[in-house]
Length: 236
Image (cartoon, rainbow, N blue to C red; front, side, top):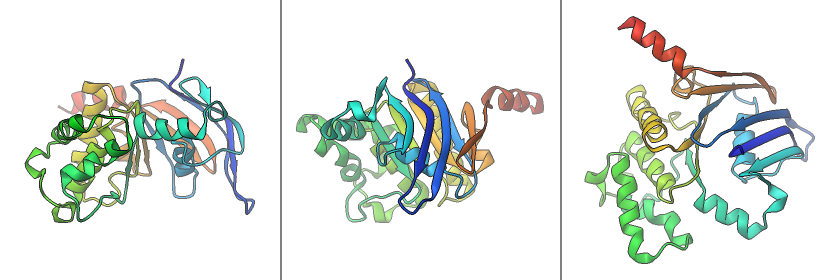
């Protein structure tokens, strides 16, 4: 059973704009998939549907074998909090909260025992290499550090899948490379399923597979990691 499965999914907004035109693909547990396309191609709409942030108009979306209609609103909220982690381009951190407080935030809305919250948050912060910044306010951090905090926050509930929407879009190239190395490490060493939304070829090639979207349709679906590594080995 695939973790995520889309079958002929369409999305039409109230103004008549058709953002998706029959999208179909599967994501298995442990995959690292990049959804790539230009601005307006529909890739962010795909993420919103996959993350239960929006509903599709036609077709079928299954998460862990169930469609969105199989879940109650309470169950959907639980899945978003416990089984999905979100990383956005704009970081979305609380500027007057510390790194630790920002990462602990999702745990306040979960059933996690208060005695475990700080420990879980510290483990997530350590995973992104920011243990030395625990007590700093997020407003005191660089852009790259803010995005690492956002990744730690997405990790803290040990979700089934991490959705990363243009996570390097507001970063310089050096910081962006660090973020992609962290995501790659989370996938390869810790088994996290990652779905990356991007318009950048270099960023997309960190993934094991790229799904190309154009004008609301899948234009291509191919693996890249083996080819990239073979090229790197040849260059060396």
